[in-house]
Amino acid sequence: MLEIDRLDAWYGPSHVLHGLSLDVRQGEILALVGRNGAGKTTTMKAVMGLIPKVAGSVRFLGQDLLGRPAHARFPLGLAYVPEDRRIVPGLSVRENLKLGLLRASAAIKEGPAIAEIAETFPRLAERLDQTAVTMSGGEQQMLAIARAMIARPKLILLDEPSEGIMPVLVEEMGRLFLALRERGVTLLLVEQNVEWALNLADRAVIIDQGAVVHESSAAALRADTEIQDRYCAV
Image (tube, rainbow, N blue to C red; front, side, top):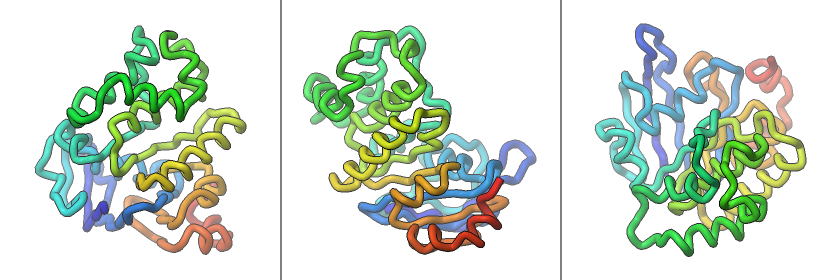
C-alpha cells in the first residue's frame, strides 16, 4: 500500500533520514519504533508532504507522492494524526470533526459521518457541542483520531497516540485500532510505548539514526529483548 524507497529528508542543513526504505501492507498495523530523535516523526511528515526537502521515492497505492503538495495527498486516502493533536482552539468538537471533511469525497455526507463517529466514540458523542480544548488530553487525542477517521481514509498515520494518556483510555484506543484493522483500515503507528505497540501490531520496524535497522513480525520483536534494549531503550 505504502512504499518508501531510499528516502532522505532534511531540516535545513540537518540530514535526518538516510536512505530509509520500508513498506506498509494493506490491512495491517505496522509499528514504527525507536528512540527519540531516530526519525520516526520525520518519516510520517515526509509521507504527508510536510518536510520541505526530501529525496527518494514515496508511493501510495502506486501513485508517486513526492511531486504532490500536502493538501493533494489527503484525498488519495491518507490521514495523519500528529503528536501535538492540532485541536483548533475556539471550535467545538463537532466543528473540529467537520474540518476532517473539507477535502473528503462528495459521497461522504456531514450528518451521517458525524453520527458514525459519535457511535464509534461515545465519549465524543456526549461532547459534540463542547469547546474541544476544554476536554481532557485523552479525549482530545480521541478527537484527533476521529477527525482523521471521518473521511474514511485507507491509511492512517498515528504519531505517539498514547503519549500522556490515562491507561484506561490507552486500552480503549488499542481496541479501536484493532477494530479499524478489522474494517480494512491500515495503520502506521509510531510509538514510544513499545510493548503496547507490539501487542497491537502485525509487523514492526525499528529506525535508528534515520535508517531502518530491524524489521520483523511484531511477535518476534516482542520476544527479542536484546534488540529492544539496543535500539528502543531510553
